[in-house]
Image 1: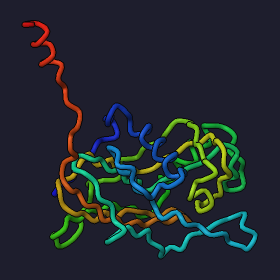
Image 2 (image 1 turned 180 degrees about the horizontal axis):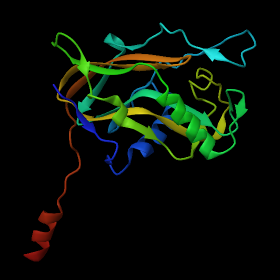
Image 3 (image 1 turned 60 degrees about the vertical axis):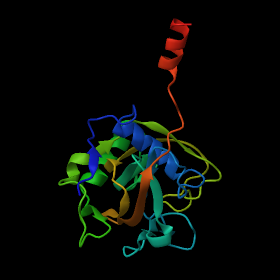
Length: 239
């Protein structure tokens, strides 16, 4: 089984890959990112669950390298056929004014350069899929490096109700941020009806992410919109 993948040079539903990444970033820090809204695209995420190094709650943060974001079994997702799936294999997100390796980032160029550097110096990355009944998983694409995406400077909106604002590698106070994001993203256009296990993640320096999703495709969404313009034209013409 080969998944249908949108290439980074292509648009999907009128939006480029980088525009989808911007939408994904704002979704990640929304009120409830783990509840699928039933739309045309399902966003997945990494295991955002960082803890402070010390008891102060500020400063460097870390994540257990053995931790996994587990959305399998009863915690899996169910979507309709022809629903796209955005897989954030590895992501770097930097904001204007952030202290990064002892230096405050003050320009879009600095944000973009360091976000790119974070991704290109990363260690192993992976993204696999296994259809129910298959013996073992296989790569979603042959070479992940061809799916590198970087955004221009954009506005990140973090609401007070954001459930992940205190769990990322830096804490985000509610408000608006100037951000650049870069990473490896896969946009799966659609999958045939069945249940699939998708595993993705990577390691770069102290940053580690590993996520496993069970996704059930339950058939086509019922169409409710009917185009009756031709019928109305005939009635008016021969009336």
